[in-house]
Amino acid sequence: MPVLRLTNTLTRTLEDFRPIDQKGKVVTFYSCGPTVYDDAHIGNFRSFLNADVLRRTLELLGYEVRHVMNITDVGHMTDDEDADGGGEDKMAVAGRRIAEAKKSGKLPAGSDIDPSNPFVIAEFYAARFLEDARHLGLKVAIEEAAKPGSMPRPTRYVREMIALVERLVARGHAYVGKDGVVYFDVKSYEKYGALSGNTLDQLREGAGERISAEHQANKKHPADFMLWKPDPSHLMKWDSPWGAGYPGWHLECSAMAAALLGEEIDLHSGGEDNIFPHHECEIAQSCCASGHAFFARYWFHTRHLMVEGMKMSKSKGNFFTARDLFAEGRTPAALRLELIRSHYRINSNFTKQGLADCQTQINRWAKSLETLEAAARGAEADRSKSAGPFERGLADFTEALCDDLNVARAIAAVNVAAGVAAGSDGAGACPVRERAALLSMNSVLGVLDRNVPLASAGDADLAAKVEALLVRRKAAREAKNWPESDKIRDELNALQVAVKDGPTGTTWSKIVK
RNA sequence: GGCCGGGUACCCAAGUGGCCUAAGGGAACGGAUUGCAAAUCCGUGAUUCGCGGGUUCAAAUCCCGCCCCGGCCUCCA
Image 1 (cartoon, rainbow, N blue to C red):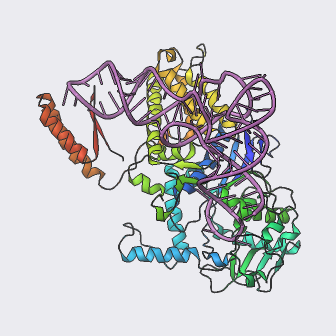
Image 2: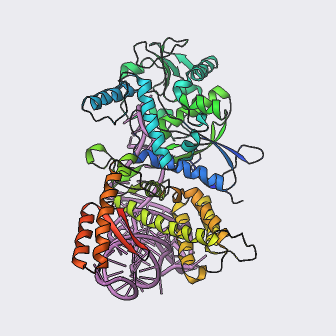
Image 3: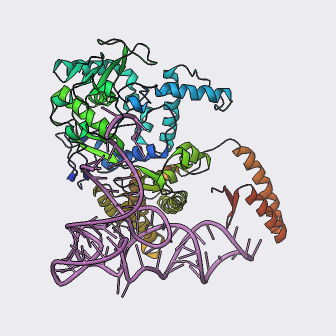
């Protein structure tokens, strides 16, 4: 089995991946998932899908991956001026947005949700997230249907979080500030800053300027972060030894990872913005509570996604959710490939053009698979034949992924194999083995099984209209009435429908711009 | 200001000292196919790697300087 080499944020070096498991079989993997106060956008999904590619690569290599991804249903704060726990709760903001949508009739049919109940809002967006994630082939979300524990909600782990805070207080790593808030004492953990490269001195002078002076006065050190905030007026609150309130936002991952995977895990992933403070704080909490030297052995961070060469933002009009693109008729496969095809440690540039490129590519692979399926039907694997293009390509494919998840090179291996297979050199290989090799490649890329646009409202109407026009066009063509046939084709094009005349008849598809 | 990642053809994107006169895909162009198209298939495509120096027998790859883009420095994937 080839060894996977990964860049570990913790050491900033390329390392051989070796799991903690003595037998070298089981891998424990925790991924930071979405906060469900709105629909996830494609930047969120790049991070989640890269984690998925890592998980699938581990599985290709024969590991058994225990993967957990949280769905954060605690709102936390929105106010930049008071990021230590003040400001308005994001769930409250989402509630207002939903109330607006309700009033203006923009809420999807059949959804009748109470905008004043944060738990209901969170479940509403969580369900939408799971739907998008499953379309995109996020394995942990697909698995969640049978194993609900794999995508835990922090609101169901408040007891564990409180226990963690109690342990930190007991061990002298946390204290109650003058304001009654429980803070983590960063000076009590000498390795604080190891992940992000920050030092406590630099943080003291930090240019973030988001923390008010009076707030700082309650803490021993400016970098001390909140573990529990008593606040009986808060939208989401729970009883605790420090009064009714809510947990600090770093706490949930430490508590749930320990509860579901163990106090020391192999892998932890997230977007690059999570490195500091989120993951830095998780490490401090987890290690101080457990006494272990490590929380996660390897830290995997995906860089941010740009859109059409710019930072994605709502005001620039280049902000997309997965649902936006599905509604345009884009296939989940194309979106998935566009989001995973460039290296996870560089900013990738999402473009509509790129999405179309990916679609073309996937269609060619689908054709290869179709050809192999036809040839393999009813056949047995023939060991006497030498390896065909896909079997040979699988070695390159795997090696590319082992090289710090070089997906671009892995994709090239599929293309090269598909090209050889289509030519005369591909003849003579065993189709059963070839098909198996291509499916192994797809077990990581995850595109061939989701290469169809999602059905949308109005599809049935359109289909009926198109079929009627095609019947007329067929008659015109049989009569060699080319002007009439072309006129009907123009009408179809006007309906955003492309016509394909093949040897076995005419097919059509929606045009995606 | 501190720390970190990046700039390769029209676009996306591999390559980190000789196998690079730079992988793979898309667009474009030429051909096959087609009533004409679309789709598909075949072919063509950077003597050059942000800019300027340097090291070396040899540099896209190493060193120095500069320009540009992006991230973090208590919302964020």
